[in-house]
Amino acid sequence: MALNLQSIGQRLGPFERDYEEKDAILYALGVGAGFDELSYVYEDGLKVIPTFGIAAIFGFLGEVLAASKADITGILHGEQELVFFRPIPPQGKLVTTGSITDIYDKGPGKGAVVIARSLTRDAQGRKLFESVFTLFCRRDGGFGGKNVPTESFSLPDRAPNMIERSSPSPEQPLLYRLSGDLFALHVDPEFARSSGFEKPIMHGLCTYGYACRALIKHLAGGDISKLRRFKGRFSRPLYPGEPIETRIWKDGDEAVFQVVHAESGEVLIDRGYASTSEARPDAIRFDGQVAIVTGAGGGLGRVYALELAKRGAKVVINDIGTARDGSGAISAGPAQQVVDEIKALGGEAVADTHSVATPEGGKALIETAMSNFGRVDILINNAGILRDKSFSKMTPEQWRDVMAVHLDGAFYATQPAFEVMKAQGYGRIVMTTSAAGLYGNFGQANYAAAKLGLVGLMNTLKQEGARSGILVNTVAPIARSRMTEDILPPDALEKLDPSHVSPLVLFLVSNRCKCNGHIYNAGMGHYSRAVIATGPGQFMGDTPSPEDIRQQWDKIDTWKDAETYDSALEGIGAFQGHIAGN
Ligand code: NAI
Image 1: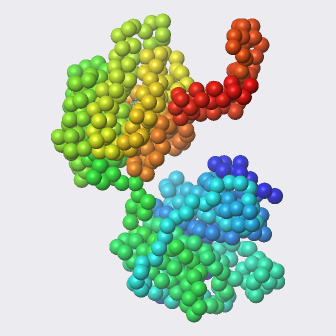
Image 2: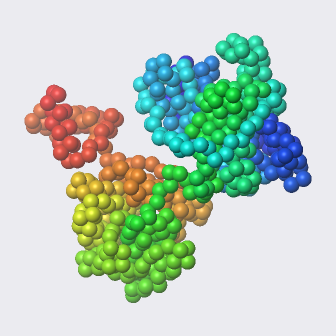
Image 3: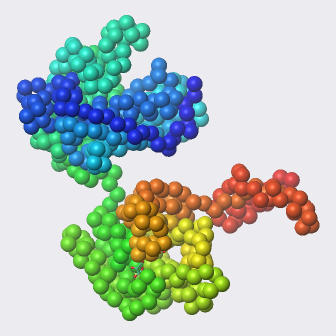
């Protein structure tokens, strides 16, 4: 049976597992703990080995297997990564949800790779750990999908700092399997022989647990709560009773490691990585960069600014401290308050109270960045006001004021920033649109028009900036703020923390982002791309009559098989292609 590609993105779980101290102790014994690590095996002050987590949610891995429809006779656990948020309590409930995030194709006869991510919380909803589980499906390759992206990894060109030697007993798998992985390969000699092994083999995750104990001892000073990240690739099977070595190369609060057969030197777990640092090895940072966030005195802008500063950016906090409808005198209070918050966290920021709604204000804002920090790498056009009214009652003033802040404001702030970025050869710009602009909203004609206008601005800037390394993208946020507090129902507002929007915006303004001219919805933990697409249409000769149009309406009106275009030229080219094809 073919792999189920439709399983990508489907929510799996919640998968619940109650456990007791006895389960954590059984696991510890299964991965070789004994009298010299009494706190892992004695209920008096019991500490749970962090990798217990993956054994305890083994049933979830079964759900991944079932959803992917991988051929069970060809599967191997490829890699396992765990990220720990807090120590696993000695007893309680684990609640796991996740999904298959990718299915890769290594080619015909070479297998496929299924990747599943999951998050496990305790019964109170606190995050305990995240898992990235890689299933290698030897018999499922060749379906024409993308190959697995390569990840570079190298061991230091020096001897390991530490070597931990262990001797799993010949009966080790019999003990380990009681933690959840009851697969016959690890217990049934006949099954093992029919699978090509001379006898039952160790569980890869059991060897993984041995390695985790070694890393806690040598990297985390014996303190389980310090381990933040633990990862390894299973490269070779091991027979029980054979001695192993965990070889550790330590570098500050990180280490790379291998588990090898102590006698033959064959690598059993490769590409091992462990860290006691909160920071991820692939952390997105903005050290040395300068960011401007307009309207950053509150709401979403404040969260973007704080997160940018936490990751090393120097931030210009622009805000005039106006009321939601743009009324009231300019107040430096909100911008200064965010600057103070950033400084209290040890970051660098400066307040700017120029209105983006005038050309002078936009220019002065960029000058604030240049005179204080000397460059502009990031501009987030976020400032906004609301003047909602049904269209018949909307006054020209209400129309103009909203246009002035959202659309004109983005033009006035972006133009001088664009010049600085062009000279630097690097820049990231984000426009802020809205579901009202993308899809329409009653009573927001002014706002919706301004917000979709920003998409048009992006569409041109993406072309004019690309040669200078300037990328421009657009976010349509949905978040709790004073802008939405009386528009959305209270139960929806509860789920709308602005901190759910900032991860996407931070990615878009990072040097890791290579997208240009894209629109993304973001909020409530969900992120998606929105596009302007064109249907295939119908060629009808030079001068069809309105009646002819009506007759062919279904074909003209459909957006089935719609395409997106990167530029007006590409769109016109496609149009000509349709004509030529007839
Ligand atoms: P907010 O009202 O908390 O933030 C807007 C900020 O812009 C305010 O602090 C305000 O003082 C400032 N501002 C207004 N006029 C300004 C000007 N001329 N110059 C400088 N600053 C000015 O609202 P929120 O929700 O944080 O909105 C941020 C952006 O996200 C806005 O562009 C909004 O249209 C957009 N948005 C928000 C959504 C949401 O669900 N909160 C939904 C869709 C879009």
